[in-house]
Image 1 (cartoon, rainbow, N blue to C red):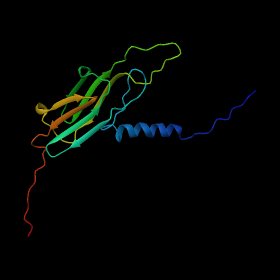
Image 2: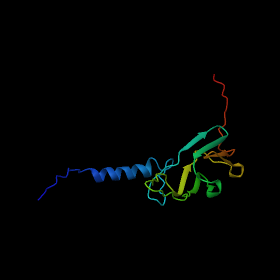
Image 3: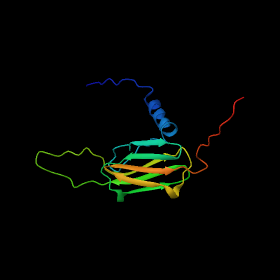
Amino acid sequence: MARWLIPLQPFRDLDEIKKEIDDIFVTRPHRRILKPMSGCEFVLAVDLLDTKDRIVVKVEVPGVDKKDMTISISDDELMIKGEVKKEQEVNEKDYYQCERTYGSFTRTIVLPATVDKSKTKASYKDGVLGITLPKSEAAKLKEIKLAIE
């Protein structure tokens, strides 16, 4: 009778709990893991630029048709939803491989300032979604020159 030695890992469950807590409190506003229908996990890469007058967001969404995406803005969040549709499978003798991820995704980005939703513009080119969100007047930084005596 064969006996197997199993290494003792007393903190394995604690490591999983720590990872879940980090996902909730540390990375959630800026980086949410997407879970498509295929069971694989992927994250949309996002660049966020906060200037004096506007917020510019660029999101990599390769393989997504612009008609398969929706963008919504609440008071302090930008939400991007979409779907990566699976192309017809290729089955040939002695060849089959599928590594790309397919399915629905949602990405929520916490905005660093209040924006003017009515003046928001979006563009989509070469798999990159660009969103320009002008800041509301109240959110723009006001400079006051003080005379120092």
